[in-house]
Length: 226
Ligand SMILES: *Cc1c(COP(=O)(O)O)cnc(C)c1O
Image 1 (cartoon, rainbow, N blue to C red):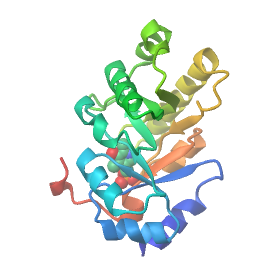
Image 2: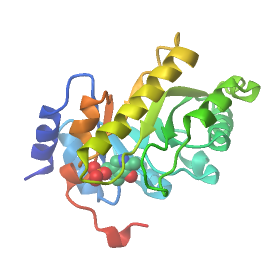
Image 3: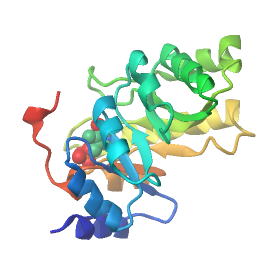
């Protein structure tokens, strides 16, 4: 199956309000070009250096999404062009993004990443941590970031009930934050959840953005990933 056919198959499963982020990490430029020629404009990457290289090589109407764990010292490299940073998992990182955005007179859209999985290793805030941040005076001074919603990853498991539960949990966090802190902010609207193995469940639980890699581009070579 071609990349174009894979995109069509995934898209056939997506309701109109759900955006497809094609996760192209580790994949060569030619594969992104094929997806681009088929009309795909939103791509997700998780390494800064790789993302910058692809940004430079490809057409400028692409929306680049950063979906990985972001190190504060690398924010400056993507600040000029990044469309959405999905994995904001600390106040420190948010403050750094604000500082870098201010230097270049941009407002950078960000999603707050929550820890919803059982696994210890996955990054993310707890709800209490986010509420503490949102209530702080320091947060209210950040005028070069825009909080556009939430992001999370479910446990890697065959247990569909558990995946349902974890995505439902992220949806309740979104609803609570919307009500308590972003009621009059129309830009707070995204729930980024769902990957190749679990995106249908994520959609049932209210996802607005799915991040899909291997179903579109094929399995990644994990030897070359860190
Ligand atoms: C790699 C990755 C994806 C895509 O994973 P697939 O299983 O290949 O669809 C989605 N989200 C994040 C955060 C990722 O790192």
